[in-house]
Image 1 (cartoon, rainbow over the protein chains, first blue to last red):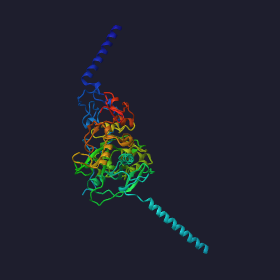
Image 2: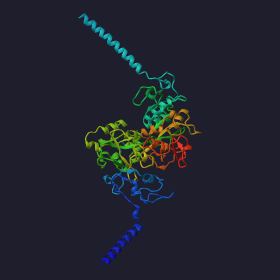
Image 3: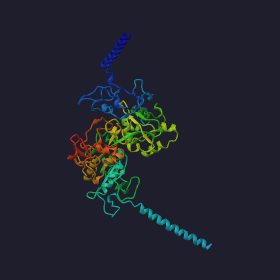
Image 4: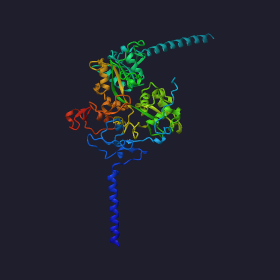
Length: 114
Length: 418
């Protein structure tokens, strides 16, 4: 009975380990650690990938979600480059006057316009 | 009765004498010399040749001016008329308006302490409206196109040299609970005022702006896509006005709903606090500094609200350099191409005044709030700038032979990569 219990336990552990490795391999769960963007955070925790790229390598990381891990060249990459600096996101839910598509409405009419 | 009359006459005579003496003293005190013939306070010898400057950057100009005034080999007298960015540009390009009124210069022997140390006044030569300008150097916070939209760039025979980097800031009273603002939020707050819908910034009377001629409002307006002439809120009239309005609030409710805009030097004044800024297309907001005063996020592109100070002068079309050799020297110092005389550490002066030396930048841009690109300064001063602010681990040096191969160039006292 005791040997059988140990056997069952070992099989269960092996199954869980295999399932985790499979998910990680397929989905890359270990490559991303997304912080709670409502809190100030250190951008190194939100790097896409390992935060390191070979010379000349680029990344197609979604910069709305993660920081840019490679050598930044464009404005968007420079603004979102991974950094050790603390960042303070603005809570977008405070924008109550956005258009239904999430865009900005036009400015009010210019009172000085003819 | 006779005695009383005599007393009255005596009193009247004394009063008349005092009035006359007072008037004479006032006239003497108000005797401001012409800027064309400034003499040294100590010894009375003629000062060095004058460079007429129109525009801003006065605290930095004041530090450089004192050194140049006393330069034993080639003195220069910097005379500045503090004016708005676009006014200074007009004075240079076509003399509208001409430089007139009272100018400031700096004599190390002056005992004046205000508004800047060692500051004296002189009468500017003036000029008829529309006549050729007598401005040698115009200093503007913004690109010429921001003042005159028809200008793609400054027209010949003038040129635009990029000087120290100036940051601009959204600020709140120090006791406010607010920490950050995004470009979208600023679009609503400064574009719609009381109708912004972005609590707690929903009261037009507590949204403190400048005006459409202000470099601060022009640059921030470009950043958030609200033209400078379309801003909601109350005109603070000046940087001091914005500071005073934001720091004179008393109730917690007023403090929390107040917001304003200033250039970098005012953003660190007591009573104010910088907001982290999250630009369009940026996933998080950043303050200018990582360590106190290091401007790391400005220098690497994470804090995009900055512009080079523009040094505009008449140039030789063949060399591209300023025609006036003294203007050429001033530009070389302010752009970091040459070190100023007498060991003046302009990098530290700039850091103290919240500017970034161009040679300490890792990013650059060519238009107002335009695209950012990586930048490698021809003679880097990143270590010297760090040393002047948050400290550096760079190797100190006096010559390049003391530097390792990994940082072989001895610049401004430290081993740099380039």
